[in-house]
Length: 165
Image (cartoon, rainbow, N blue to C red):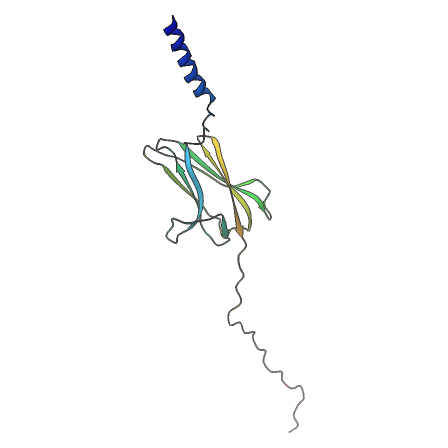
């Protein structure tokens, strides 16, 4: 009987220790890292940043997964504060389902012409669960000075006085 009580006590201590630990976040382990990047000039993610120019096309979003098991990763680019666009509007939405042994998902987004300056956010979902909101800024295009602009010269005015012959 005394052995059974000691055994129950040991089981109780270990069970209490397991229950006392904070639960692991469901997102932790699903993804390791999410980052935004400028294009490297060859169509791949380059320099990691959260600040882009209106001419940075495309903008890349890289999701590094914690496990190489099949999941569906979704990215929504949201216009947070952009002139002429309703706040919290979805600008781009795309998703991808990984296969075994894939631990990275590469998304990219591009406008029809140039990005409109403002504040944006990339919302990342894994298997339908929001795992993070990643804000970024697009700064307006820098205007270039006119190069060698010369106005047309109008022809010299003719005299309106008639010559006497």
